Amino acid sequence: MAADVKLGGVTDMTVGTPWKVILRFSIPLLLGNLFQQMYNTVDAAVVGRYMGSEALAAVGTSGPIINLMVGLFIGFSVGAGILISQFFGAKNEQAIRRAINTAWFLTLVTGFLVTVVGIQATPWILQRLHTPEEIYPMACSYLWVIFLGVTISMYYNMAASVLRALGDSWTPLLALGIASICNIILDLFFVVVLKRGVAGVAWATITAQLISVLFSAWRMNRIKNYTKITCDSLHPDRHMVGGMIKTGLPAAVQQTAFSLGMILIQTVINDFGKYVMAAYVVVMKVDALCILPITTLGLAMTSYSGQNIGAGDLKRVEAGTHQGIVLSMSITLCLSVLLFFAGKYPLMLFTDEAALIQESTHLLRILCPFYWMLSVIDVLAGVMRGAGNTIIPMLNSMLCQCFIRIPLLFFLMEIFQTSDVLYWSMVIGWACGFVFITAYYKSGWWKRRVGTFAALAQEKRED
Image (cartoon, rainbow, N blue to C red; front, side, top):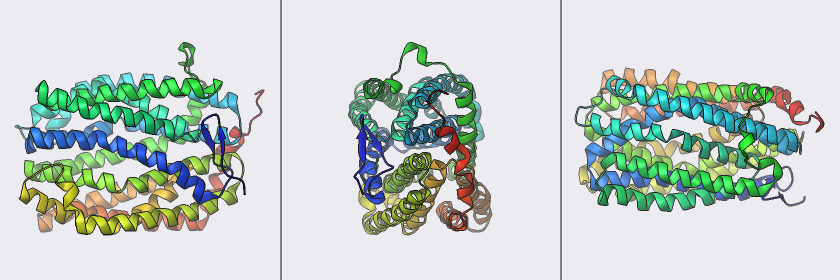
C-alpha cells in the first residue's frame, strides 16, 4: 500500500499502513504535547522552588476553575477539528475554508465572554472552594491574569485543532517548542528578577502563548489558500456553526461536567490543608507527563478516523483502531513500570521536602499500574469523535468522573479519612469507563453515526 502523502505540509491519513501513519503523525504531536506540559511543569517547578508550598497550592487550586471557564470552547474546537478533518478527507477545499473562518469567529466571541465572566466570578468561586486564607490572594491574582489573556490561549488551541485536522502535527510542535523556551526564560524573569510572584508566572504563560499564536498564524498563511487568515475571515457560516455545535456540544458538556467535578474534588483536597494540596499538584503534574502518549494517540485517532470517514473507508478505520490500541498499550505498559519503580525522581523536580516526596511517590504508585485502561479508553474515544459520535465519549467521561469517582470519593472519605481515596476513586472510575466504552465499540453501534457528517463532507464544490 502507498505511503502517506503530503499535501502542502499536511498529511493524508487515508493511505498507507495504519499504525505507521498513526505513529508518524503522533510523534510530533507527542513532542508538542510535551512542550505544552512544560508550561505547567515549569510553572509549578519555579513556584515550588522559589516561592514554596503555599504558592504551589495556589496555582494548583486555580486549575479546575480555568478548565471550567473554557469547557464550552473545548467543545467548539473539537467540533471544528472533526468537521475539517472530514472535509479534508473528501478533498473539499471550499468547505474547509468556511469551517476555518467560522472557527476564528467562535474563538473571538468565546474568548471575550470567558474573560468577562472569569474575572468577575474568580473571588466567589475561590471562596466556594474553601480556599485557605493564606492562599486566596495569590490564587486570585493568578486567575485574573490568566483570564485577561484567555483569548490568546483559545486562539492557539483552535489553530492547533485545525492544523491537526489537516494532518499537520509539526506546526503545533514548532510553535510550542519556541513558546516553551520563552516561557522558561520569562518565568525566571518575572519571578526571580521582577519578584512578581504567581501573577508573574501567569504573565509569562500568556506571553509565551501569544508567540505560539503568531507562529501558527504565519504557518497557516503559507500552507494553502483555503487556510489563510485575513481580515475578512472573522465571519461565521451558519451551517458550519450548527455543525460545530452539534458535533462539539457533547465534548463541551463533557469538559464542563469534568471541570465541575474537579471543583468538587478540589474542595475535598483543600479541606486537608496546603500540604495535601501541594502533594496533589505534584502528583498530577507527573501523572500528566506520563499519560501524554495515551492522550496523544487519542488525538491522532480522531484525525485518522475523521479523514477516513470522510473518504468513506470504514474498514480502514477499524484496522487503524486495533493497531492503535496495541501501539498505545505497549507504550503505556513500559512507562507504567518505569514510573512505579523510579517515580520519585521526577517528583524531585518540584520540591526537595523529603516527606512530601515520600507521600507523593506513594500516591503515584496507586495510579500508574492502571494506565493501560486509559490507553484503550482514549483510542476508542478518539475513533468515535472522528466518526462524528461525540456523545459516547462524553457519557463515558461523565460516567468515570461524575457518576462513579465523585460519589465514591465522598463515600470513602466518610469511612477512611485519608488522601488515598482521592486516587483509588479515580482508578475505579477508569475501570468503569473502560468496561463501558469497550462494550460499546464491540457492539458496533458507533458505526450507525458514521454517516452523520460524511454526507456533508462529500458535498459538491459548487455548493
